[in-house]
Image (cartoon, rainbow, N blue to C red; front, side, top):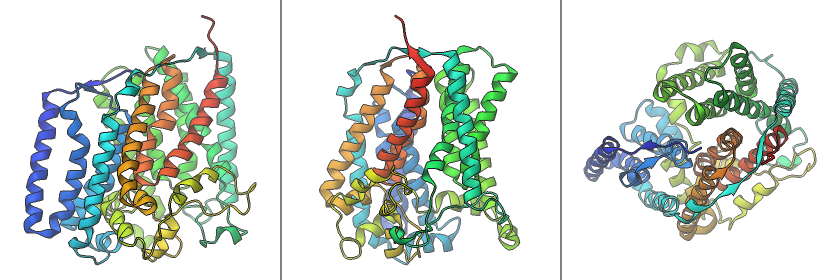
Length: 473
């Protein structure tokens, strides 16, 4: 896990060119307030890439890459769409703007950019963790590897089949559709509410097996045999089966992205070409799953266009968008009272299955935001990190919270980077449990991004432990 690309003059020129475009858009926004959204989105991304002007090299699969991915998709591209009202003006107005003028977004935009500045400063100002070292004296045992990974795949298949059975199968005609949605915000009194979280998590064991197997084979063989490719491909399909059935397009893309990470750290050959292949596969699966959501609805299928696919990818309330952040901040404390850490602390009980804790309260705050601000019946809107910190601790929460999150992200990354152990042991853990942390925290919430990723870390950590043995030297 010690691979980096050189930050050369070409990359620095690109950053400076982006800065020039951002400056031009900012001047345009002073004349036409509709361009304010685009200016804020570009400034947010610019803040995140300015450090590249001073770096000599960079790890493409560091947590910061996925923070930039979240900002780029959830804020920058979305803000550009809001300014130019493309590709779907009706969806932009209905989902994002809600009839508010550009001036409505100015104060939240300032807080949003303040948060991105603090996050960036916290990440790149953390110098102390660069010297941390962790020695782990373990090595793979071939026998253990076969038994444990085989068991993981079997458990994943059984869990997937059980989940399909308990959620009605595909009788509705929709192969890839949303499952286990809530019917009421009072989930404690809804005796029929089941999300089958245990089955969903056991389904992830196939992803664990896929990453370990792919990493193990790729690092130890100049060229994979037909049998090895069959095992890797089979485990990949099993890993994608449950999220595909649940129409969790993002989770399928993360499986592909983690596979790209394996080729980055252990592969050989042209990484740019491999990146293109994996990116094309991700886009194709995303569009295909979007189409399947409308299976059985001939009218919707006949109207489905490429622009609709772009809209579903960008024009949504799932990421760290400016519009969502603005609506939440402007409704505090009148519609949403200050929580003083409650929305973060409640995630501690999230890993407890509802079968063991029937009166477990609703952990996600998304349905509260969705009903009170957007007028949804039950569908949720995750707050995003900036809005959540403001919701809990006002402006000091944004400043100190974003600084801390940036510092911790870099510390965790350096701990894995400097780990003295076989890279094929540490890289699957890192790719499965660590790289999504920044993306999940900034786009969803702090509790979700930390607690649920810790559960993933514990899961793959246990699997890797039983796949390995104590090194003799």
